[in-house]
Length: 84
Image 1 (cartoon, helix red, strand yellow):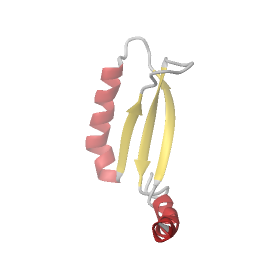
Image 2 (cartoon, rainbow, N blue to C red):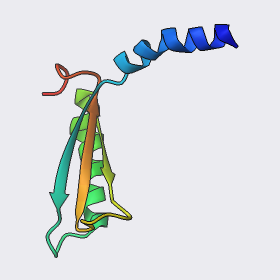
Image 3 (cartoon, one colour):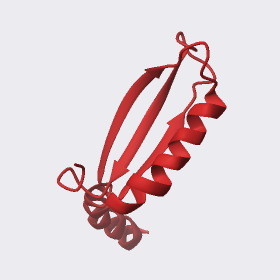
Image 4 (cartoon, one colour):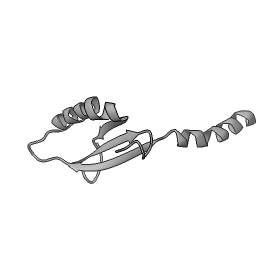
């Protein structure tokens, strides 16, 4: 058990280094833009610009919050330098 704990403690910093860079952008959709439309935009973005630049975006929609009108664009890249 001690050996397993020691290995986990040694590997913990490596998992932080592999985490990469993330940006979070809060978005409030206009009434004429549905979440499904925004997800289509995100998919198109990932397929074109994101794929070519090592960037992957996700959209988080809160289920329980004091602000149910906002959604969150979460983009990930290998590191801050790769994010242009």
